[in-house]
Length: 373
Image (cartoon, rainbow, N blue to C red; front, top):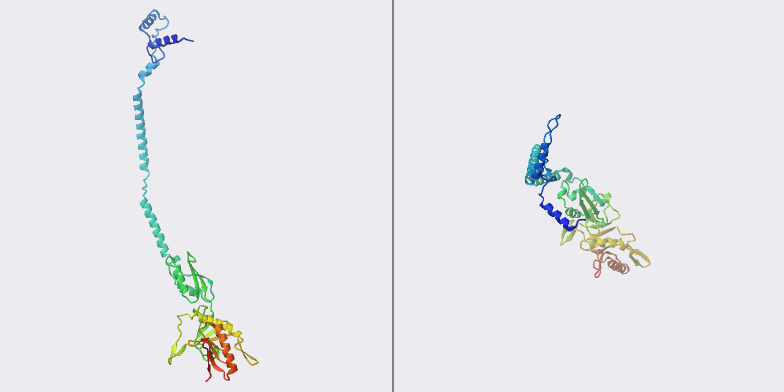
Protein backbone atom coordinates (compact mmCIF):
# COMPACT_ATOMS: atom_id res chain seq x y z
CA UNK A 1 0.00 0.00 0.00
CA UNK A 2 1.49 3.32 -1.06
CA UNK A 3 2.02 5.97 1.51
CA UNK A 4 0.46 9.38 1.13
CA UNK A 5 3.90 10.89 0.49
CA UNK A 6 4.65 8.67 -2.50
CA UNK A 7 1.24 9.25 -3.94
CA UNK A 8 1.74 12.99 -3.76
CA UNK A 9 5.21 12.75 -5.45
CA UNK A 10 3.79 10.61 -8.21
CA UNK A 11 0.95 13.12 -8.79
CA UNK A 12 3.44 16.03 -8.95
CA UNK A 13 5.60 14.19 -11.47
CA UNK A 14 2.53 13.56 -13.69
CA UNK A 15 1.60 17.20 -13.57
CA UNK A 16 5.05 18.17 -14.75
CA UNK A 17 4.89 15.81 -17.71
CA UNK A 18 3.59 17.27 -20.96
CA UNK A 19 -0.14 16.64 -21.50
CA UNK A 20 -0.84 14.48 -24.54
CA UNK A 21 -4.16 13.49 -25.94
CA UNK A 22 -2.94 10.07 -27.17
CA UNK A 23 -1.60 6.93 -25.53
CA UNK A 24 2.04 7.48 -26.95
CA UNK A 25 4.33 10.00 -25.31
CA UNK A 26 6.02 12.38 -27.78
CA UNK A 27 9.71 11.80 -28.36
CA UNK A 28 12.31 14.25 -27.02
CA UNK A 29 15.11 15.77 -29.26
CA UNK A 30 17.74 13.56 -27.66
CA UNK A 31 15.67 10.47 -28.37
CA UNK A 32 15.17 11.56 -31.96
CA UNK A 33 18.91 12.01 -32.46
CA UNK A 34 19.71 8.60 -30.92
CA UNK A 35 17.18 6.91 -33.13
CA UNK A 36 18.75 8.52 -36.23
CA UNK A 37 22.18 7.26 -35.29
CA UNK A 38 20.95 3.68 -34.92
CA UNK A 39 19.48 3.82 -38.35
CA UNK A 40 22.81 4.99 -39.86
CA UNK A 41 24.81 2.04 -38.35
CA UNK A 42 22.39 -0.55 -39.74
CA UNK A 43 23.49 -1.59 -43.23
CA UNK A 44 21.01 -3.05 -45.64
CA UNK A 45 21.40 -6.64 -46.83
CA UNK A 46 23.06 -7.20 -50.21
CA UNK A 47 20.45 -9.59 -51.54
CA UNK A 48 17.45 -7.54 -50.57
CA UNK A 49 16.55 -4.12 -51.76
CA UNK A 50 16.87 -1.23 -49.48
CA UNK A 51 13.93 -1.14 -47.10
CA UNK A 52 12.28 2.15 -46.50
CA UNK A 53 13.09 3.85 -43.30
CA UNK A 54 10.43 3.24 -40.64
CA UNK A 55 8.12 6.10 -40.11
CA UNK A 56 7.52 7.59 -36.78
CA UNK A 57 4.11 6.77 -35.27
CA UNK A 58 1.72 9.61 -34.79
CA UNK A 59 -0.55 9.56 -31.75
CA UNK A 60 -4.20 8.64 -32.61
CA UNK A 61 -5.68 11.34 -30.51
CA UNK A 62 -3.56 14.01 -32.21
CA UNK A 63 -4.53 12.73 -35.65
CA UNK A 64 -8.23 12.76 -34.86
CA UNK A 65 -7.90 16.22 -33.46
CA UNK A 66 -6.40 17.50 -36.69
CA UNK A 67 -8.84 15.73 -39.07
CA UNK A 68 -12.21 15.99 -37.21
CA UNK A 69 -14.13 19.27 -37.39
CA UNK A 70 -14.77 21.07 -34.23
CA UNK A 71 -18.09 20.77 -32.31
CA UNK A 72 -19.60 24.01 -33.62
CA UNK A 73 -19.02 23.02 -37.21
CA UNK A 74 -20.51 19.59 -36.68
CA UNK A 75 -23.65 21.10 -35.14
CA UNK A 76 -23.93 23.51 -38.06
CA UNK A 77 -23.63 20.61 -40.49
CA UNK A 78 -26.35 18.66 -38.70
CA UNK A 79 -28.70 21.67 -38.80
CA UNK A 80 -28.04 22.12 -42.51
CA UNK A 81 -28.79 18.46 -43.18
CA UNK A 82 -32.05 18.65 -41.22
CA UNK A 83 -33.14 21.77 -43.11
CA UNK A 84 -32.42 20.12 -46.47
CA UNK A 85 -34.43 17.02 -45.44
CA UNK A 86 -37.33 19.19 -44.27
CA UNK A 87 -37.34 21.10 -47.57
CA UNK A 88 -37.47 17.80 -49.47
CA UNK A 89 -40.40 16.53 -47.36
CA UNK A 90 -42.31 19.81 -47.78
CA UNK A 91 -41.93 19.70 -51.54
CA UNK A 92 -43.20 16.09 -51.60
CA UNK A 93 -46.35 17.01 -49.55
CA UNK A 94 -47.02 19.97 -51.81
CA UNK A 95 -46.90 17.71 -54.87
CA UNK A 96 -49.27 15.24 -53.23
CA UNK A 97 -51.74 17.98 -52.22
CA UNK A 98 -51.72 19.33 -55.73
CA UNK A 99 -52.64 15.88 -57.03
CA UNK A 100 -55.71 15.51 -54.69
CA UNK A 101 -58.59 18.04 -55.23
CA UNK A 102 -59.25 20.24 -52.23
CA UNK A 103 -62.72 19.99 -50.61
CA UNK A 104 -63.88 23.16 -48.86
CA UNK A 105 -65.95 22.61 -45.65
CA UNK A 106 -68.36 25.33 -44.49
CA UNK A 107 -70.97 25.25 -41.71
CA UNK A 108 -73.07 27.72 -43.65
CA UNK A 109 -73.28 25.31 -46.55
CA UNK A 110 -74.32 22.48 -44.21
CA UNK A 111 -76.96 24.68 -42.55
CA UNK A 112 -78.30 25.70 -45.94
CA UNK A 113 -78.64 22.06 -47.01
CA UNK A 114 -80.50 21.22 -43.77
CA UNK A 115 -82.92 24.12 -44.28
CA UNK A 116 -83.49 23.09 -47.88
CA UNK A 117 -84.21 19.50 -46.84
CA UNK A 118 -86.67 20.57 -44.15
CA UNK A 119 -88.43 22.87 -46.62
CA UNK A 120 -88.89 19.98 -49.04
CA UNK A 121 -90.28 17.78 -46.25
CA UNK A 122 -92.67 20.54 -45.15
CA UNK A 123 -93.87 21.06 -48.70
CA UNK A 124 -94.58 17.36 -49.13
CA UNK A 125 -96.31 17.25 -45.75
CA UNK A 126 -98.63 20.13 -46.67
CA UNK A 127 -99.43 19.00 -50.21
CA UNK A 128 -99.51 15.19 -50.03
CA UNK A 129 -102.99 13.73 -50.41
CA UNK A 130 -102.30 11.14 -47.70
CA UNK A 131 -102.46 13.84 -45.00
CA UNK A 132 -105.93 15.11 -46.00
CA UNK A 133 -108.91 13.60 -44.19
CA UNK A 134 -111.15 11.50 -46.42
CA UNK A 135 -112.60 9.20 -43.77
CA UNK A 136 -112.81 8.79 -40.02
CA UNK A 137 -113.00 5.95 -37.52
CA UNK A 138 -116.11 6.08 -35.32
CA UNK A 139 -116.63 4.13 -32.11
CA UNK A 140 -118.48 4.27 -28.81
CA UNK A 141 -122.06 3.65 -27.70
CA UNK A 142 -123.99 4.50 -30.85
CA UNK A 143 -127.21 2.97 -32.12
CA UNK A 144 -128.98 5.54 -34.25
CA UNK A 145 -126.32 8.13 -35.03
CA UNK A 146 -124.65 6.78 -38.18
CA UNK A 147 -120.90 7.14 -38.94
CA UNK A 148 -121.75 9.01 -42.15
CA UNK A 149 -123.60 11.61 -40.08
CA UNK A 150 -120.69 11.85 -37.65
CA UNK A 151 -118.34 12.48 -40.57
CA UNK A 152 -120.66 15.16 -41.95
CA UNK A 153 -121.27 16.92 -38.64
CA UNK A 154 -117.60 16.86 -37.64
CA UNK A 155 -116.73 19.00 -40.71
CA UNK A 156 -113.29 17.45 -41.23
CA UNK A 157 -113.70 16.33 -44.85
CA UNK A 158 -110.75 17.32 -47.10
CA UNK A 159 -109.03 19.16 -44.29
CA UNK A 160 -105.34 18.75 -43.51
CA UNK A 161 -104.56 17.08 -40.19
CA UNK A 162 -102.16 19.94 -39.42
CA UNK A 163 -105.13 22.34 -39.22
CA UNK A 164 -107.47 20.15 -37.15
CA UNK A 165 -108.32 21.20 -33.60
CA UNK A 166 -109.56 18.33 -31.44
CA UNK A 167 -111.36 20.61 -28.97
CA UNK A 168 -113.16 22.49 -31.74
CA UNK A 169 -114.37 19.24 -33.34
CA UNK A 170 -115.62 17.96 -29.98
CA UNK A 171 -117.62 21.16 -29.36
CA UNK A 172 -119.08 20.96 -32.86
CA UNK A 173 -120.23 17.37 -32.36
CA UNK A 174 -121.65 17.99 -28.89
CA UNK A 175 -123.99 20.57 -30.41
CA UNK A 176 -125.67 17.72 -32.31
CA UNK A 177 -128.78 16.61 -30.32
CA UNK A 178 -127.90 12.90 -30.59
CA UNK A 179 -124.46 13.35 -29.00
CA UNK A 180 -124.13 13.42 -25.22
CA UNK A 181 -120.33 13.39 -25.26
CA UNK A 182 -117.62 13.25 -27.94
CA UNK A 183 -113.88 12.54 -27.79
CA UNK A 184 -111.66 13.24 -30.81
CA UNK A 185 -108.13 11.91 -31.42
CA UNK A 186 -106.01 13.19 -34.34
CA UNK A 187 -103.01 11.10 -35.37
CA UNK A 188 -101.13 9.80 -38.41
CA UNK A 189 -102.44 7.77 -41.35
CA UNK A 190 -104.28 5.55 -41.93
CA UNK A 191 -106.73 6.35 -39.09
CA UNK A 192 -105.91 10.02 -38.83
CA UNK A 193 -109.15 11.03 -37.07
CA UNK A 194 -110.78 8.79 -34.46
CA UNK A 195 -114.05 9.87 -32.81
CA UNK A 196 -115.69 8.25 -29.80
CA UNK A 197 -119.41 9.04 -29.44
CA UNK A 198 -121.68 8.66 -26.41
CA UNK A 199 -125.21 8.78 -27.80
CA UNK A 200 -128.21 10.27 -26.01
CA UNK A 201 -130.92 7.82 -24.98
CA UNK A 202 -134.55 8.83 -25.65
CA UNK A 203 -136.73 8.89 -22.51
CA UNK A 204 -140.07 9.59 -24.18
CA UNK A 205 -141.71 10.55 -27.47
CA UNK A 206 -143.16 14.05 -27.79
CA UNK A 207 -145.81 14.70 -30.44
CA UNK A 208 -146.77 18.13 -31.69
CA UNK A 209 -150.28 18.37 -33.16
CA UNK A 210 -152.71 15.61 -34.12
CA UNK A 211 -154.83 16.00 -30.97
CA UNK A 212 -158.52 15.20 -31.13
CA UNK A 213 -160.10 13.66 -28.07
CA UNK A 214 -156.74 13.14 -26.43
CA UNK A 215 -156.01 9.76 -28.08
CA UNK A 216 -153.40 8.90 -30.67
CA UNK A 217 -154.94 8.94 -34.13
CA UNK A 218 -155.08 5.52 -35.74
CA UNK A 219 -152.61 5.13 -38.57
CA UNK A 220 -155.19 3.22 -40.58
CA UNK A 221 -157.33 6.34 -40.99
CA UNK A 222 -154.67 8.05 -43.03
CA UNK A 223 -154.85 11.18 -40.89
CA UNK A 224 -151.70 12.94 -39.81
CA UNK A 225 -150.55 12.17 -36.31
CA UNK A 226 -148.45 15.31 -36.08
CA UNK A 227 -144.70 15.61 -35.79
CA UNK A 228 -142.97 13.31 -33.32
CA UNK A 229 -139.62 13.79 -31.65
CA UNK A 230 -137.57 11.95 -29.11
CA UNK A 231 -136.74 13.69 -25.84
CA UNK A 232 -134.00 12.57 -23.45
CA UNK A 233 -134.11 12.86 -19.66
CA UNK A 234 -132.55 16.35 -19.84
CA UNK A 235 -135.18 17.67 -22.28
CA UNK A 236 -132.97 17.63 -25.42
CA UNK A 237 -135.13 17.22 -28.52
CA UNK A 238 -134.01 14.71 -31.18
CA UNK A 239 -135.51 13.59 -34.45
CA UNK A 240 -137.37 10.30 -34.09
CA UNK A 241 -135.50 7.49 -35.87
CA UNK A 242 -138.08 4.72 -35.42
CA UNK A 243 -141.40 3.96 -33.70
CA UNK A 244 -140.81 2.67 -30.19
CA UNK A 245 -143.84 1.43 -28.28
CA UNK A 246 -141.81 1.11 -25.08
CA UNK A 247 -141.50 4.90 -24.79
CA UNK A 248 -144.10 7.12 -23.14
CA UNK A 249 -145.96 9.28 -25.69
CA UNK A 250 -146.80 12.89 -24.78
CA UNK A 251 -149.17 14.72 -27.13
CA UNK A 252 -149.13 18.50 -27.31
CA UNK A 253 -151.39 20.75 -29.38
CA UNK A 254 -149.46 22.78 -31.92
CA UNK A 255 -151.69 25.83 -31.44
CA UNK A 256 -153.32 27.34 -28.38
CA UNK A 257 -155.90 30.08 -27.85
CA UNK A 258 -154.61 33.39 -26.57
CA UNK A 259 -156.91 36.42 -26.54
CA UNK A 260 -159.05 34.94 -29.27
CA UNK A 261 -156.12 34.13 -31.53
CA UNK A 262 -154.33 30.85 -32.21
CA UNK A 263 -150.68 31.11 -31.18
CA UNK A 264 -147.95 28.65 -32.12
CA UNK A 265 -146.41 27.53 -28.82
CA UNK A 266 -143.69 25.32 -30.30
CA UNK A 267 -140.03 26.30 -30.63
CA UNK A 268 -138.07 23.27 -31.77
CA UNK A 269 -134.71 25.01 -31.24
CA UNK A 270 -135.26 25.07 -27.46
CA UNK A 271 -135.17 22.03 -25.16
CA UNK A 272 -138.23 20.95 -23.22
CA UNK A 273 -137.95 21.88 -19.52
CA UNK A 274 -136.35 19.08 -17.58
CA UNK A 275 -139.00 19.27 -14.82
CA UNK A 276 -141.73 18.62 -17.40
CA UNK A 277 -139.95 15.53 -18.73
CA UNK A 278 -139.24 14.09 -15.29
CA UNK A 279 -142.80 14.85 -14.16
CA UNK A 280 -144.23 12.95 -17.13
CA UNK A 281 -142.11 9.91 -16.34
CA UNK A 282 -143.01 10.08 -12.64
CA UNK A 283 -146.72 10.38 -13.48
CA UNK A 284 -146.45 7.27 -15.65
CA UNK A 285 -144.85 5.26 -12.84
CA UNK A 286 -147.08 6.39 -9.92
CA UNK A 287 -150.55 6.69 -11.39
CA UNK A 288 -151.24 2.95 -11.35
CA UNK A 289 -150.72 2.82 -7.57
CA UNK A 290 -153.78 5.02 -6.77
CA UNK A 291 -157.44 3.84 -6.69
CA UNK A 292 -160.84 5.35 -5.85
CA UNK A 293 -163.48 3.62 -3.66
CA UNK A 294 -167.23 4.21 -4.18
CA UNK A 295 -169.34 2.09 -1.88
CA UNK A 296 -168.32 -1.54 -2.14
CA UNK A 297 -167.04 -1.17 -5.73
CA UNK A 298 -163.40 -0.49 -6.57
CA UNK A 299 -162.78 2.05 -9.33
CA UNK A 300 -159.11 2.15 -10.38
CA UNK A 301 -157.64 5.23 -12.01
CA UNK A 302 -155.63 3.09 -14.39
CA UNK A 303 -154.51 -0.35 -13.40
CA UNK A 304 -152.23 -0.51 -16.42
CA UNK A 305 -149.22 1.75 -16.77
CA UNK A 306 -150.06 4.95 -18.59
CA UNK A 307 -148.68 4.94 -22.12
CA UNK A 308 -150.14 8.24 -23.40
CA UNK A 309 -150.11 11.66 -21.73
CA UNK A 310 -151.27 15.07 -22.92
CA UNK A 311 -149.68 18.46 -22.48
CA UNK A 312 -151.45 21.81 -22.51
CA UNK A 313 -149.48 25.07 -22.32
CA UNK A 314 -151.86 26.36 -19.61
CA UNK A 315 -152.92 23.27 -17.63
CA UNK A 316 -149.71 21.26 -18.05
CA UNK A 317 -149.50 17.46 -18.12
CA UNK A 318 -152.66 15.34 -18.04
CA UNK A 319 -154.33 12.19 -19.20
CA UNK A 320 -157.83 10.70 -19.67
CA UNK A 321 -158.70 8.10 -17.05
CA UNK A 322 -161.86 6.88 -18.78
CA UNK A 323 -164.27 9.14 -16.81
CA UNK A 324 -162.73 12.58 -17.02
CA UNK A 325 -159.47 14.36 -17.90
CA UNK A 326 -157.09 15.27 -15.10
CA UNK A 327 -154.33 17.93 -15.36
CA UNK A 328 -151.22 18.00 -13.15
CA UNK A 329 -149.36 21.14 -14.25
CA UNK A 330 -145.70 21.29 -15.30
CA UNK A 331 -144.60 18.12 -13.54
CA UNK A 332 -143.27 19.22 -10.19
CA UNK A 333 -144.48 17.54 -6.95
CA UNK A 334 -146.39 14.84 -8.83
CA UNK A 335 -146.84 12.57 -5.80
CA UNK A 336 -148.61 15.31 -3.80
CA UNK A 337 -150.83 16.19 -6.73
CA UNK A 338 -151.86 12.56 -7.15
CA UNK A 339 -152.88 12.42 -3.49
CA UNK A 340 -154.99 15.58 -3.89
CA UNK A 341 -156.52 14.18 -7.06
CA UNK A 342 -157.50 10.98 -5.24
CA UNK A 343 -159.31 13.01 -2.55
CA UNK A 344 -161.17 15.12 -5.12
CA UNK A 345 -162.20 12.06 -7.13
CA UNK A 346 -163.45 10.35 -3.97
CA UNK A 347 -165.54 13.43 -3.14
CA UNK A 348 -166.95 13.70 -6.65
CA UNK A 349 -167.94 10.04 -6.77
CA UNK A 350 -169.60 10.10 -3.35
CA UNK A 351 -171.19 13.54 -3.24
CA UNK A 352 -171.85 14.53 -6.85
CA UNK A 353 -174.37 12.88 -9.11
CA UNK A 354 -172.76 14.10 -12.31
CA UNK A 355 -169.16 13.35 -13.14
CA UNK A 356 -167.03 16.38 -14.04
CA UNK A 357 -165.49 16.93 -17.45
CA UNK A 358 -162.01 17.57 -16.01
CA UNK A 359 -160.18 17.89 -12.72
CA UNK A 360 -157.29 20.35 -12.44
CA UNK A 361 -154.64 19.96 -9.70
CA UNK A 362 -151.92 22.07 -11.31
CA UNK A 363 -151.80 24.00 -8.03
CA UNK A 364 -152.37 21.46 -5.23
CA UNK A 365 -153.36 24.28 -2.83
CA UNK A 366 -156.21 25.42 -5.13
CA UNK A 367 -157.55 22.40 -7.02
CA UNK A 368 -160.89 22.52 -8.88
CA UNK A 369 -163.04 20.53 -11.27
CA UNK A 370 -165.17 21.64 -14.19
CA UNK A 371 -168.65 20.20 -14.78
CA UNK A 372 -169.85 18.92 -18.07
CA UNK A 373 -171.95 21.29 -20.15
